[in-house]
Image 1: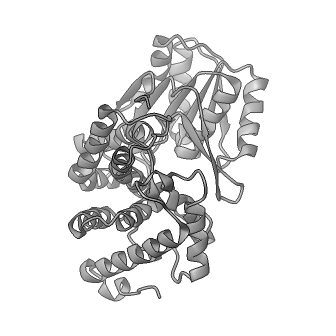
Image 2 (image 1 turned 90 degrees about the horizontal axis):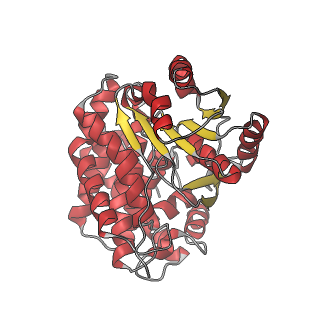
Length: 380
């Protein structure tokens, strides 16, 4: 098996980076017209900046408001808009689902794509894949593309003005990166590119974890004050670049499969991708039989920034055996990344790990939560 590593052609990050968007595109030889698939947060803050940066660099452009779900219908709607204006480059500006949609449109039209995340809420911006959902929010499939984005431009002054919860959700997605990549490597399984993990991907995944532990809390304080600090810059890079390279070139395992299973439960639909991945990581650690000190380290970090550590934290106040098996069966379906573990996986094993992880997280909250009366609401 050959080792395979991938990355975007160019990564740009910093305060007010959006003002340089047109210039950065010009450096790469990208030509207009430009279609922007835009989330509401990005459009409200950047519409005037886009006028200046594109007109100053000779680009004509049009923006289309994203409708909320990376689905086949939404991809087709945006693709039709791109065709109508004869777009020659697609820009995604917004959260992870916006960027996933933009990448899908660009791939189907064989056009360059630029990702401009308005939030550090997932590791989607740097990747060569999209996660597709049904119209009602259930995981549908992964779509893989032949190349990574041509440009990823991250404006930390914009991210500092975003909701703190979404930064935390990005930490949840990034938190699993090192553990999943290590599992894939140790099991001699394929990464998301169909190849062997490189030592570069492994190192970047571990640096991602170290950065979260060192800078996560400080970065969260910065976003709560809408300020850009060195800790926020490092944390944004971890959520976006390090996790993006680490998950794709390192690989995924149980944590992301459990996320996919959780999307089958309606109560979880109000929770973000990274929030569900964070709980999925606890399930993975339990399933792999990791030592209690490591699990406690993950619990401590997750609690410090507000990531879910129990099913109750994801809106599931009482999980029936039937619902647990629905999650476990979806998470262990053929082709799922749960099968990247170094041992055979089945739904019964996953169901047991889900319940055990929930019990561990609930007990942890009972011991360490300031409001112990609320933390002690254990699930049967």
